[in-house]
Amino acid sequence: NAPSGFTDLIEQYKVDTCIFGHLHDQISFNRIPKEFGSTKLELVSADYLDFRLKEIM
Image (cartoon, rainbow, N blue to C red; front, side, top):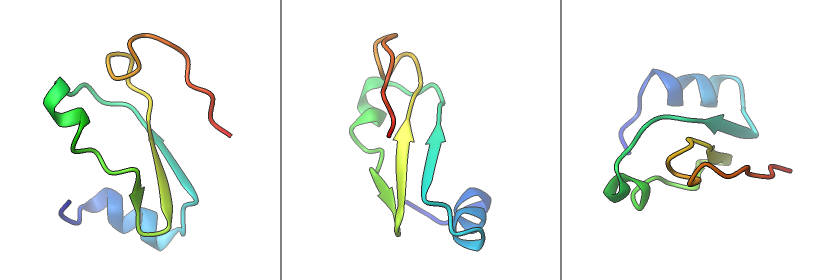
C-alpha cells in the first residue's frame, strides 16, 4: 500500500492499533493489510464483519 496522509500520522504518533471502517467490495477485503509497520490495523466496517460485533483487545 502506498503512503498517505493517514500512514504519515500513524508513523508520526506511533499508533499501536488503528481501528477503521470504510465501505469496500468483497475483492478489496482480501487486499487489506493486517499491519502497517508496527501498527495493528483493525477493519470494522459493517459489510466486512457481516454486521457482527468484533472484539478488539
